[in-house]
Length: 334
Image 1: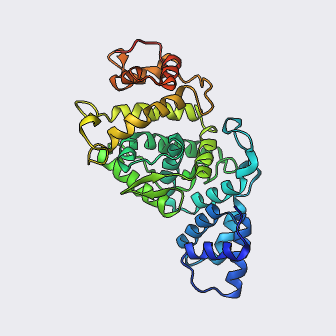
Image 2: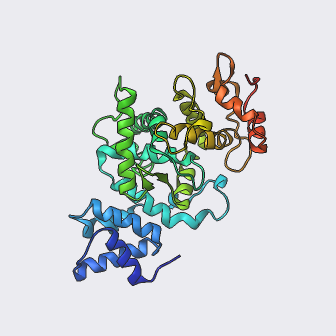
Image 3: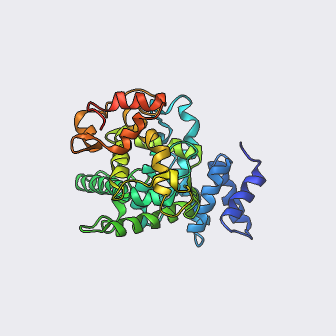
């Protein structure tokens, strides 16, 4: 829904905590809200960008939004569905928002943001799940840093800009050898706070993380541009979640309330693992992604047998689960 000009300016400036504006600042705000299409989501994100640039937003914001208005932002993977160009304004603002994140955090926040493409529509994801997914998020960090190095060696700045893989401006690598699981999770929590502060994600660390549908569409479109696409990313998420299973298995939720401390990851896996499996092997549109080859499926095996958590899906009388299992595995369940 497009807001009236005055309402759009008010929303953006209120989000940016700007109480008084000069005529020049108001003219800048007017240009910015038009670049945002006067769309509430985009205005909220632009307001968060103002907060990040409180000292120079009047000269920085409009050029930043315009810089992200390349033709490539209008491209959508056919896998995302019809109406491919409808999100171009949102994409431009989201891209500018990613570029506005301070350099030392940008590559990590972008990696976390990209992994969020794997979450189901309208899902609320506990912070404990992000802790468990820290290794997968750092895989994306490593991919981005390797790509940045390759592009720097080729002197190719044009095809590699901050909106896609922002580590080309990174002064030192985020990924360091010997990082413990606690250090990985701590970094991910920090990036999560940054993403929330920039309105890229909704909710809170205490109550769970959500995504606006348009933001989710954008992350999915980005995923399809990487090697392996969304299916490959989903497979890494499944493997990482299963690797996070505590000794003795996930908590039996029959005897534990979903809100109990320590059960958030178990509850999420019990409710959402089939979604990630479906995304890994069938894709968003239910078409086999080709990710389910023998080498990929090996990450779902324990001692040559299907992981016990996945085997439990065979006991569910849900057509989606049966279809996923048929498409994804060439081994027998435990």
